Image (cartoon, rainbow, N blue to C red):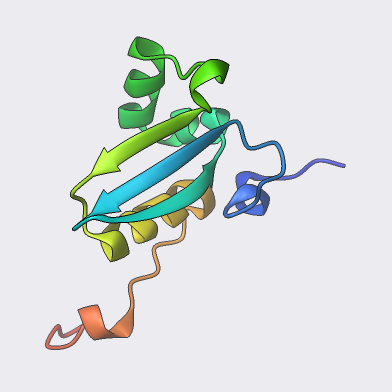
Length: 95
């Protein structure tokens, strides 16, 4: 059965990296799939190419100081190609 990357968002199935987003001392872990991340992001392609995540360190990468809401929006977009912005972020914007 073929599938697309949407299926893998937030799923531990075939996850080969953990993305630990750290902001204001709070850590949030996300399941990551290097193939999906690299296919949709030059940032992750460069990160994994230059600094391969090895099995012995638990396959965890830490990204610091990004706004947690913005980070989750971006990560979901990489998997789904759907940009979902919470309504409270759109207040005062005429669409």
